[in-house]
Image 1 (tube, chains in turn green, red):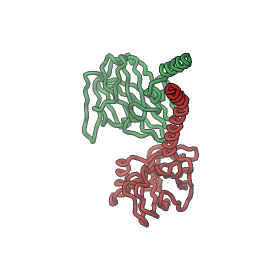
Image 2 (cartoon, each protein chain N blue to C red; image 1 turned 90 degrees about the vertical axis):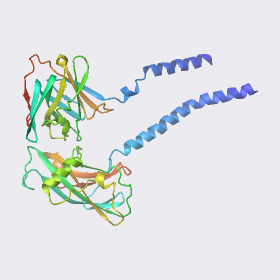
Image 3 (cartoon, one colour; image 1 turned 90 degrees about the horizontal axis):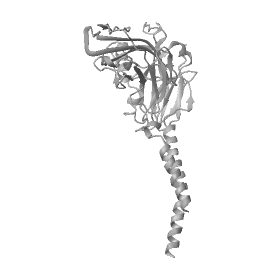
Image 4 (tube, helix red, strand yellow; image 1 turned 30 degrees about the vertical axis):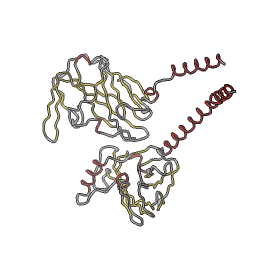
Length: 181
Length: 190
């Protein structure tokens, strides 16, 4: 009897030690790719067109000129999204800097034209737009862009794209127009 | 004697443990399957006239295809087209909360699914197209105040779809209580 109980206890301990945590079991379904490729999950894909950095961004809102300065750097990512089987709102975009810190899309630039987070991607209609981030200048190496329907997705697709490091200095001013940058 | 009875109870408890674990897994799995069934549409009653569903008789009232220049003389860029679907539901009984989580979508021949535009954008488009009329409600909002017996509700949903999908589109409607059952009407747009 005692060996059976000990065996059962050992088995249960092994099962407990090897069971992934709940957050992992119900976490995102990740797809990883590079900037040069179109990265596709089961539900949507992303193709990065351009990555630009600037010390200030400018755009027009309701005919009024908006000029936003930054003590860090603005990073504008131009991308094309496609939905495959069902309408997908890609609301969540995060830029992971070289230190591993995560930067969500800037709310300061949330009313800029052509921002992807305000669009909904429909099957058969590729959608282009911008993702705008504000981050410190020393975070610009080996950045990773993470996209999903919503922040902290559970059992839903999440695409992670490694961005190429831009060696040039940030431009002084980046103008965002209705048709992009 | 008392020791034997205690030992028997202990053994019985131990032996019943696997059964209880299996029962718990089955009950949980059943609940999850039921939840999942109430989120999918697999049993579709397709028709072109009037269909009975969720305590009402449903029919397609009007479909508008906007963006190719024929309706409203409006041209949308590239393949993009706007489809406006109006449906009438005549209640055969008091609906109450029977239309909870009402969902309307467009589906094409390959199974692709388009969800309606959000309420704000939908209302803005309605005001642009028909400035003198109050925007009609979608199914979700109508489900909060459904019609009484023998009264009818007119609902409207708007979709953005690619031009190539239009010939095979049908509109699909379902409510949480009856899913996976749903009803569908072919749009017959060419």
